Image (cartoon, rainbow, N blue to C red; front, side, top):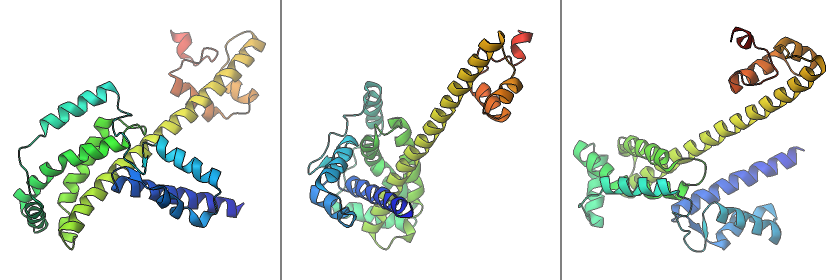
Length: 254
């Protein structure tokens, strides 16, 4: 059992690293890179193909870039167009000018930090497009990325050089978006679990109400069903007192 859990954890960790590598490479990854990443797990060809299919489903191109806008809704496309227009700037920097700007920001120059943030805003939008379709709104992803960008601009002094500072900004933006997606997934999972609990309580209440010929109280249901009173109360609250066969007292007052 322990070995199975260990293998599952290794698989999840490796998959996360593969996705992070793909994001750094413009949302694409080579098939050989995937094979190398999972080489120590002794996957057969069918299992590797399943991994590749999963990555494609996550909008990651295998060997070539995936269409970054394939998962955007019409509303998100409209929002993206308006946002990009609002942050459009005529400032164009050469590689040397960009490096000098980053170095000034690293040295604590407030104006340089502001210019650097404006320069990176379009990159935040591009990263958000890559993470769209994974359970979070594009607008929220951009917002989280912008906050991370602003925070990162204040932390550049810890970097050794301009390249490391730029990598720090990119990593912070990606991590902020990934964290937001993970939090959304946990909230969605919790909501789904509670919805299943509501259905279970409603089914049990209906059966007991049919046998008694009337609505039942939460305590009666707890006494008869394999559920605690707290579980039933949580389900009733989550449903907004909408479980028809349970008499909560509000029904009598209404």
